[in-house]
Image (cartoon, rainbow, N blue to C red):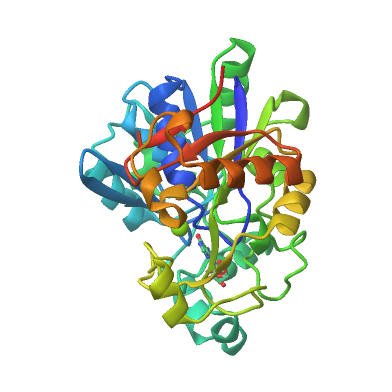
Length: 334
Ligand code: IMP
Ligand code: MG
């Protein structure tokens, strides 16, 4: 704080939505800017209710947080309105940067019809084709859509003015660093954009010198959906046995899984310039952690795991997720 970037460490679904919603409530965030597009779903649980968000920032739980969608983002208009309805955010606190581009039904059709995209296992929302169209300079922008008019803003100016005034800003990254188009080394099994911390700041229009913290989000085991390598992958049966088996919030697809990878965690902390880390789903690998709110209440093996992550990555693990609810967190910040 005041300006923090949240970046996913692996192939997405690390629990960035939960961390963002926690910080919104706990730190009483002034701004939260969501980047990326509709292919990423951020899950927020609050008071027993589940929200799977593809467009609205997960920080919506705090009614005082100004919610923005970044200039570099791609807006899926029907999904946006569905989520406005679901989250009940009103026009005065939800803003869309006028220069964000629009993802249309034809992009989804193009995505689904592409043989290469089938092999990659894209989400089918059409984000790749929408980005192609934007690069061709033929895309529609948010300012071209009459229904979006009440939400339009200069998000870049708002967020930079906010920083000038000392307001707190969270830049909500989507997907995971290992899906980065440029930096993951996983091409072509990647998404259509750079998902790293610098790109998140860039999409929101925040210069690198204005970012104070990069919070890398680790999950205590690794999951991936779609094609491409997953080092250390275990079988579906083994995942079920260990309680790691997950189904994607957005697409309903089964996730593949693998154990935590210390080498990858170290490398990605470095490339993203992480200053802090969050570890989610600790209760999935150590069930006796469930619901813990104090570090001292963790069993020895869980503390040993956290210590090993800190030793091997050089980054302090400041937030630890111990259950699905937004407030199921051990907060070790001062
Ligand atoms: P696309 O982003 O829909 O083009 O899909 C490209 C690859 O990224 C596929 O392997 C998807 O499964 C994966 N992917 C895209 N968004 C997410 C996400 O939010 N979580 C996990 N995987 C994702
Ligand atoms: Mg997700």
